[in-house]
Image 1: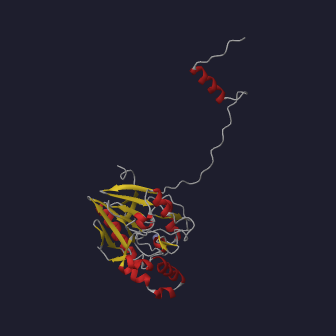
Image 2: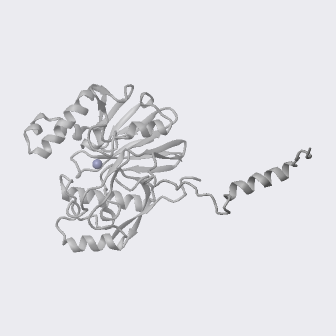
Image 3: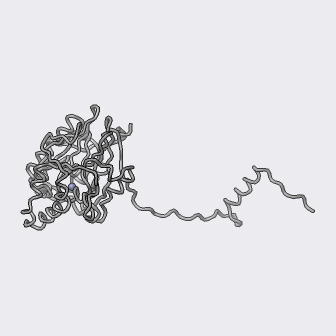
Length: 326
Ligand SMILES: [Zn+2]
């Protein structure tokens, strides 16, 4: 009778290890190939601003044709292309992200803009998912601030006839609300009528819980409005400040991170008053550059956060690095 084989622990590990690494033929075992997983997208980015916490949430992004002629329609196409190429951007397609901002003051949870909503666009309407991923539930939101009444900012206020943020009060520019809530707009050209219908469906029903601000109006201590007309008649940007730390939330006053910064005078087709919109861009960009205030814009590349630097006779966007993580 042969003696039983007894292996020490070290020998046993070495033995099974050898089996695992080679087949009987001596060739390495074939391993399953890792699948392609597609583009990864972040749901949110959170940072401290003094005693406040700011969370920027991804509602989604679309990839329309352009940016020309939606941006710079009065320019030669080649000149727009030259600017894009100089900034390492493709010429015929661009990304338009949607980035609502949540500010937690410690006592109030304030949401700036409500995203597209579930039914508006194929790759957007993710704000409620992002909110959840970031650790909040819609019923915790105390205030919803509307920078302006375009559908990509108000589409997510009401779903299936119910307010998505059931405990919130609402804030909107007075001039903005008066303009868009007029039922006369429903008789306008199809583009305007479509926007007006969206306001009737998503904003007007919330009016009893809404307060209306003008320039310098306060949402609450530390958050005040800055008139920024042009994109729409009553568009409001917001200045947020806590313990000396500041942030500018400018909605759609500045849209494209290259064109709107480096050529602020070029018209944007979606701006309702193009001359006033260009003045507003110069004013806000100049203020952010002079005061070195961080900025977040609804359509800037996610997480839509950075700084403004003077550049030639205009500006350039400096995307956030790690400064908000420290
Ligand atoms: Zn927008």
